[in-house]
Image 1 (cartoon, rainbow, N blue to C red):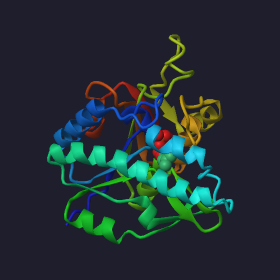
Image 2 (cartoon, rainbow, N blue to C red; image 1 turned 90 degrees about the vertical axis):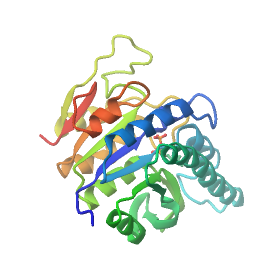
Image 3 (cartoon, helix red, strand yellow; image 1 turned 135 degrees about the vertical axis):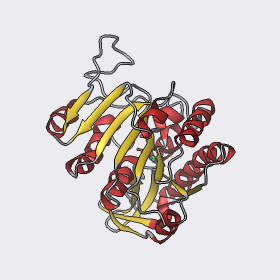
Image 4 (cartoon, rainbow, N blue to C red; image 1 turned 45 degrees about the vertical axis):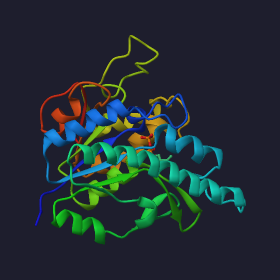
Length: 267
Ligand code: IPE
């Protein structure tokens, strides 16, 4: 029986896919991340990954995030977006299984229902049984049914915060394509300065100023991600945002070692 409070790892879509091109995975990075997860050897890890260029373009094309507008092509768009996510999830699972991580995927569209884009219902039966036997559940940003909107997109970030609150997570590690949060976009501005530490208050002040993502992003770019994470920080869950595209930052962050990135604490 595993009673340990979980560590929740988000693998951002910007790290595991090339957001500039539709449905382009970064398989070398996915493989290295699986190696880091194996090396960290945690028995209380929950992995959540984003959609990147697999989820966002299809979701945007059919307006899935804003709900069902009685347009039958949207139903195909919902199905296609979910399918694209299962394809990306398959690549993540391939890498984890290859590295002998006992990872099993859980499709959020099958066990989460939202109301106005916020989680209203979660069937945790499978998740609980996985925790008992020390499996590594792998979830992902997905299309979900919504009691008010018909359907919507549930981001990996909202999933991370929801699971962190529900299971009183020890910490959240977010792997992205930059070494943490910066005062402006480090990809376009070489003068961008990283934030090493942020309190909840500083994070809230910063949130509206955070930039838009590169490429299509139906879940609001970095500002949207931070908005989703704020409830977890409010509940005193420590959040580390670090680079997942190179080095060993994910392994280091998972095993409580210092990393280049942003540490977020309630106070
Ligand atoms: C988006 O999930 C999922 C879909 C668009 C279906 P996220 O919002 O967590 O994905 P990334 O990390 O920004 O790519």
